[in-house]
Image 1 (cartoon, rainbow, N blue to C red):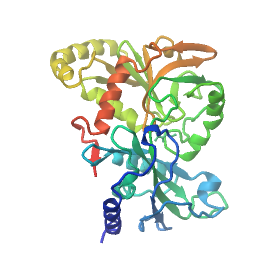
Image 2 (cartoon, rainbow, N blue to C red; image 1 turned 45 degrees about the vertical axis):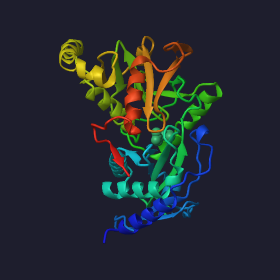
Image 3 (cartoon, helix red, strand yellow; image 1 turned 180 degrees about the vertical axis):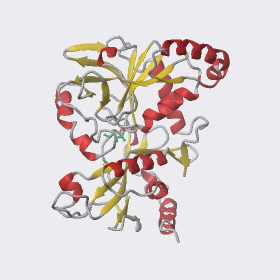
Length: 395
Ligand code: COI
């Protein structure tokens, strides 16, 4: 029998028992940890196979002081969200993408990883067991945090002999204290988040510890977060501490290309795909990109205009480029916005670089392009518009 049969039974029981909402203030959720009812734990033995996963009451875990994750940072995490719909069903957003990214990260960090099916089934079981913690529609989401760690004891530097895959969840609202109001970033030009050949492109825990110093200094000065530059040229945009970045100029949307030092965000990818699906054109850096833009624009205007306008009420035809984006391009950008699972799509109100502050928009909120993309993405995630991409998984 499948190792999940037991958890499916368990989670059905939980979901039947706990259909009422938890008694918390749903109107004031921020992004802070709130303990919930159950967590999922699956161990991987020395043979590299994950097997005995189970739902346990949420609580502290026991680790050897010599665990690989504590001593040598052998750990990864993921982040995804579940939304409650008006009809009572629950939607997960692209969980198999997180599963796939964890597998890539595990390969880099010398760890075994759950299969995509194991990952997705475990996420489903954890969400159902904690159903009463999923915010009512429009109030937020249930943030799902899968962890993969070297839990076996090591002393000499080596991969841990045993691994633990664990999922916990917490109800969340907006990530930044600004809510959906624009955030204010400062460009960091001394400390770096990632290096070529390093681990910046995977979701390993150490990448996040590495940004705390710059982030804390920025917050102490009143900034919302830090925007990092590449460590070689100190010129190209990489990402913000917890999210990817997009720059809009003349309706052309640009974002740093994935090249090993930038986390391949699932929201980043979804925003590019949303743009593409609506007739936006993704182009890679080509010398003739403007010629292509004109050509593509004409074709799009002829072929897609009516459908785009009817479906989404778009305000214009845009192009998305994945390329090197220089810090100087921030100076005359029309809009800047961040994307991530936790931050969703956050408009950037200003960026400060070497003492010079550039402000975007009227300071009131989203720009035209980011508003459109935010609106389509969140409606898809919440099941408010037809999911032509088959991105949502209904529980
Ligand atoms: C997420 O967006 O899910 C992340 O993992 C970022 C984290 C720092 C909150």
